Image (cartoon, rainbow, N blue to C red; front, side):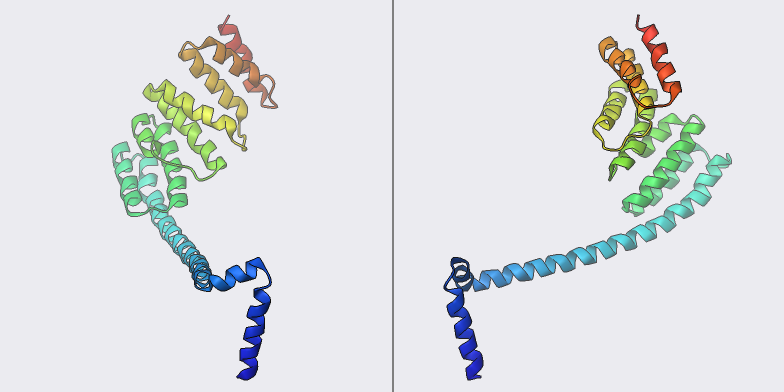
Length: 220
C-alpha cells in the first residue's frame, strides 16, 4: 500500500516537471470526461453502423420483393405506371435505407421511361440523392433526361454541369453532347459550340465525335 502511494507521488512529481504534465494534473477530471466521451463515441458509431447494416439488409429484401412483384408486373403490362409508382412509394415510405432504394429507384425509372411514362419516371428520381461520384453519374444523367422531357431545360443543364467536376468520368462524350444540345435549345450558341468542340478533344467513342461534328455544322 505504502509502495503504491509512493509510486503515485513520484509519478505526479514527474508530471509536474513539464507544462503538459502539470496541465493534465490540474485538469484530471476534464481529461477523464473527454476520454470517456471518445470511448462512448466509438461505441456509438459501432452500434449505429450495425443498425445501418441491419436496415439495409431489411430494405434490400423488401425492395427485392417489390421488384419481383410490382416491377415485374409492370414490365409484363399487368400493372400501369401509376400503380407501379404507388407500389414503389409504399416501400420507400417504410424504409430509409439508401443503397437499396437507390438501386431499385433506377430500375423503376428505366422501366417507366422504356414505356414512355416520363412523368411517373421523373417522380421516382426527382428527389433521389446520391452518396458517391459513381451514383451521381447514374442519377444525374437520368434526371437530366427526365427534366428535359418535362420541359425543364435549365434543370437538365444543371444536372449535367454537376458531372463536370466529378473524379469519375463515365461516357463523358455523351455528357458534353447532351450539354451542347441543351445549350443550343436555350439559344446559348457559344456554350453549345464549346461543348461540341470539347467532345472532339476527348478520348471517347467515335460516334460522339461524329455527333459533335454534326451539331457544330448546325451552329453555322
